[in-house]
Amino acid sequence: MVFPRRGARAPRTTAHTGTGLLLGAARHSAGRTTAVFVCSAASAGASLALPAVLGRTLDLSLGGAGGAGFWPVLCIALIGAEVLLDALEALLSGVASARATAWLRLRALTGLLGAPPDRAARLTPGDLATRLSANATEAGTAPVSAAALAASLLAPAGAVVALFLIDLWTAVAFLAGVPLLALVVRAFARGTSDSVARYQAVQSVIASRLVEVVDGARTVAAAGTAERERDRILAPLPELAVQGRRMWQVHGRAVARGGVLMPLLTTGVLAVGGVALAAGRISVGELLAASRYATLAAGIGAGAGLVGSLVRSRSAASRTAALAGLAPMAYGTARLPADGPGRLELRGVRVVRDGRPLLTGVDLTIPGGVSAAVVGRSGAGKSTLAAVAGRLTDPDAGRVLLDGVPLESLAYGPLRREVGYAFERPVLFGDTIGEALAAGPDRASPGRIRSAARAASADAFVRLLPRGYDTPPGEAPLSGGELQRLGLARAFAHAGRLLILDDATSSLDTVTERQVERALARDVRAGTRLVIAHRLSSAVRADLVVWLEEGRVRAVGTHAELWRLPAYRAVFAAREAETPASETAAPASETATPTAAGLPGNLAHGEPGR
Image 1 (tube, rainbow, N blue to C red):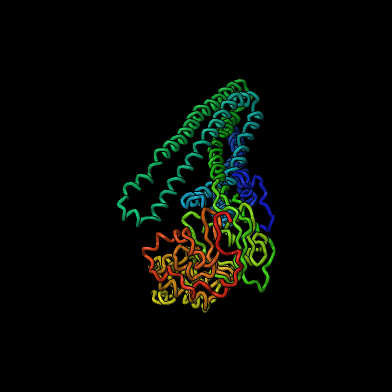
Image 2 (cartoon, rainbow, N blue to C red):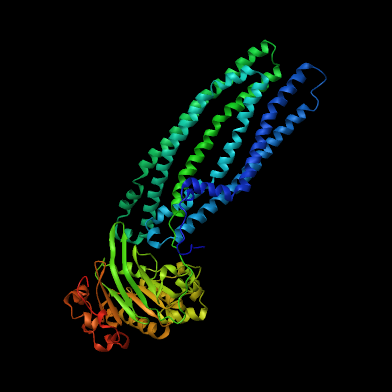
């Protein structure tokens, strides 16, 4: 995947709209789409030649001049060519549509994965699945539909010219009804556009609810709410039916009007042609050709189906373009100093999401090599701080620096190699557990994976699995704590100078958590640790504690220093009843570490706003 450099802006052109995305898909499949047009145009040419050849054959046969000669053979050849060209067009259309769909999905997926995770998370999984599957497939047919529509106009246009050549008044009779035909097509296109957009939106809602329920199937079963959830998933069905009926009503009206208008046009041409035949201006064969050309000319109404397909494709492309148009994170070309200790600085950081400030005026310095715990009540902004610290999102104001280098100026590779994460609910990607742990900016070796798994207390239970590290993640019966340990193992295997643990030990028991902390200090690459802490024990054992309150840093210092403040103790009040007293005492041996003791005095505790 290619990421834009620092300062690079994604150009706000039509590429971010449904029409722009369709134009890009058309350029990508230009060769195959051109081949579809050529085949369709050649088929139209054969269909235009056939009435004239048939008429000539009939005139020669009725003339009794010794046979029609090669003209019947030419008729058969034209019919065969038309059939073969139609078959080739169908084959090329399928290939071109598949290629265009793949290109659209790649663009949408690239936009989705290149955007900050918090922006991508605003779309539900069901909605994303609908946009990347059904919507992308429908949008991918647009280049072929456009080529077929353009070619479909050749036969009616050529047929009108042929009517002029046979007899002027037959062409005039047909053209008199063309305005009515145009009104039918226009009404069809307008009516289809709105109903299709609404239909696709309702589809997305149903898919989103279905994915939510499948993901929470155990909760639904335990709560006994299966019927209620079923009703909630199916609640939009009446609206879906309404929009579906609208589409078919629009289509039905167009077909009905066209079904009345086209025979009238053909009948009018035949009537005028009959008069011309009686007057001796045309022959019987020419009258036959005129009737066939009138049918071909009336076929312009058949393009309404292709117009409808293009309308549906454009609506689907607009939904796919919303993913492709997600603003990507810009990266620079800077590198981190080779001997940097992992010093993290936040200067005037402010983060606002959906109009709500999550972090405000955060000024914070975490010395290199320090283990810092971030504590605070729920909603204080702890996870937002973790996301900003490792550049999973950018602040709306302020800067974040690692070893003196602004994160936004770093190249993508160095940033991800030196900043690692472990999360509360990790997801394992890969065909095997070993592959999932090895995946990262640089692929970890099997030895490094096992060492990291031992540090995370995961190696023992992984080796007990039927196929060990070769077990597919989906076949491994993992508890929440075991899954967290695998997430930690993956982070340890790729540890850089800054490791951020976002509540990554919440499902571990106290003994295992302590074992992991000891191994992290002893066996994992040395560096700065930023721990989003909910347990008192994590704050007790940290070198430094960052106390957040309502998106602001209320105080920074050692746990022993902050424990003197009643408001700080109140943060952990809810856990005191279930936490051993030995953990709340904050002995000096666990808090007054050499690293923390050397901190400047101005990093100690303070009151709100300081």
